[in-house]
Image (cartoon, rainbow, N blue to C red; front, side):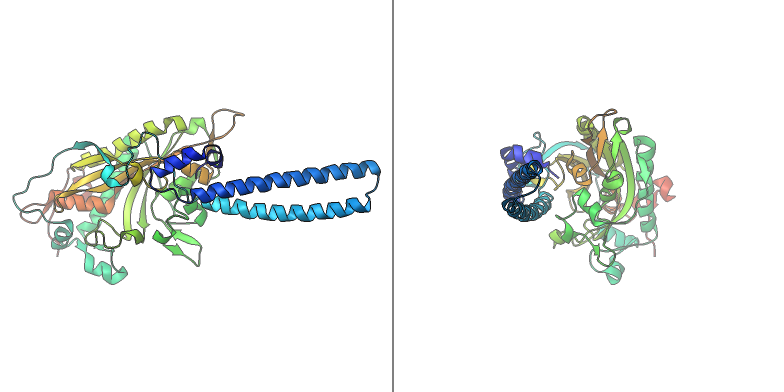
Length: 422
C-alpha cells in the first residue's frame, strides 16, 4: 500500500510513476477522496473548537442561556453528521488505496509490456539432440509418470496426476530446494497453513486485486494458498521487530491454487500453467537500505538452483509495464525448453519495498526509543516444482525415450535415469 502522505504531498510524482506502469488504478478517485476527507476533518475540528468555546462561556456564566442550548444542540447534530461522512470517506479512501499498485523503482526500464524487458545475462547452452526434442507432456506420458487424463477425471482441466517416479520427482525437487536454501543459503524453513484469512490475503496484496484468481472457502471465510509469499509476508503481521533481527530469511514449500482467470487459452497442454501447482518460496524482511542488496542475493540464489540442475537459462529485468502489482523491481529467470524451442519463465524475484509492510503493519525499531519504520519485503521462486519437472524432462530426454537426471538430483531419486513405468 502506498503511503497516504506521499499521495497527498506528491500527487504528480505518484501520477507519473503509475503512468509508466500503464496502470494508474483509481488514483484520481483516491485524490478526490483525500481532498474530501481532509475538508471534512477540517470542518469537524472547527465545530469542536466552536463547541469548546461555548462550553467555556457557559462555565463563566454559571448556566447556559436558551440560545446557547439551541446552538449546542445544532452543533452536536452537525458534528455527528460530519463525523459520519468522514468515516464513510475514510473507509472509501482506504478501500481504493488498497487497489493502487506499487511505484516502480526509478532504475526500472520503462516499457508498456514484456517486449521492453531487458536481458541481463545467460548461463549454459541449449542441449544438442540427435532427434527432434519432444515437449514434456509427451515425454511424461510415454514414461508413464504424468497422467493428464486422470487429472482431468478427478479435478478438471489444468490438473494432472504424478505417478511413480513422477511423484518421487516432485518430492525430490521439494527436498532438494529446501535443503539447498537451508544448508547453503541461510534460510529458515517454515511449515505453513495452506489456507488463510482475508486479512492475510490483503496484507500481501492479493486482495482485493486478485480475488477472482483465488479460491475462496465461503463457509469458513478462508482462502486457498495462492503462493507461499502470502503466509510468509504475514508471519510478522502487526509486529515491531528490532534492527538486530533483520534480515529475516525464510523458505517454505506450499501447494498453491490459482484460477488463472486471466490466462484463458494459454498453455493448455502440459504442466506450465496449472490451477494447482507446487512451489518452494524464498522470502526476506530487511531494513530499507539493505533491500536492493538482498534482491541481488536472492536472484543469485535462484540462479544457483538452476545451475545445480544443469539447466540453460537467462536472467531478465522486467520493465515498468510488466511488474507485478506489489513489486517495485523484479527479475525473471527463464529456462530453455527444447520441446518448445523457447525460454519460459521459471522464477520471479521481486523487491516490494514497504508496500506489503504497510498493508500488514510490519515495522522495526533501529534503537530503543526510536520511532518504528516499515521493513522492506522481498519474495522469490526457489523454484516452482512443476515447471522444473517440465524443464528436466525436456532437457534430459534421450533417443531411447529415457530422461537423464541432473547429478544433484540422483541421490534424492535413487536413480540416474527415468525409464518407462507401466
